[in-house]
Length: 307
Image (tube, rainbow, N blue to C red; front, side):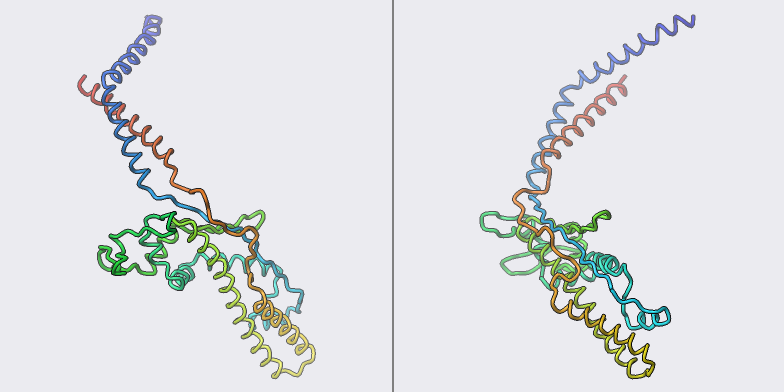
């Protein structure tokens, strides 16, 4: 009895498999039609997407290490004066610069300073022949130079700094390789020329930001240390204070003469000749697969439901 059940099991499986193929064959025209519609829709969708170009720059952190060593009892005074004498100061400066570079405040000021609202929020394409942006007329009217997008409160027709920053985040990327320490900064946009220009301006802006910050801190530190020198008569302390002033004077000198203050360009950005995305062929292939799978499932569901 048991042997009879075991020998009948493969026969049942074979019958189920034949029935499955029979159901699919019966609904072949539904499968073909659905897959064809998905493929056509995917082609139109892929063709409607604008080309996105990517520009990237490779940067090397400018490492600095102080040669000055101070006794422990004067370490608090140096810290109070804002003097960073640690051996990892270069790494700390790089980490700070990367966080500032990705911060909302820095990017918002960068957008406002360069007036990037229109190319970020209203651009929907790029005309290679004239090297002009193609703007979305439902967002920005070029004739009247007015924002005309229809939005609900609290949003305004003209995008806010926060809105523009959040959109720019989709175009912008910065990453540091943990092994080599190299930093890659990239921008994607419909215009390859704007992508390259923005990358270069971002590098210049973060170097200028860090240069200005450290220059201000060094000048304040020097003023504070000069005050401390006047207030003490201990020779060793005065000698150490003069050494601290010398260290801060070195920072002021470097900040005034070095343009690439925190990041040095290793591989500059170029105008991309090939698009980075969209992958139109992949979109079409995935749509065909999706259409085929969904249509087969629908055909099988209808067949077994009727049965």
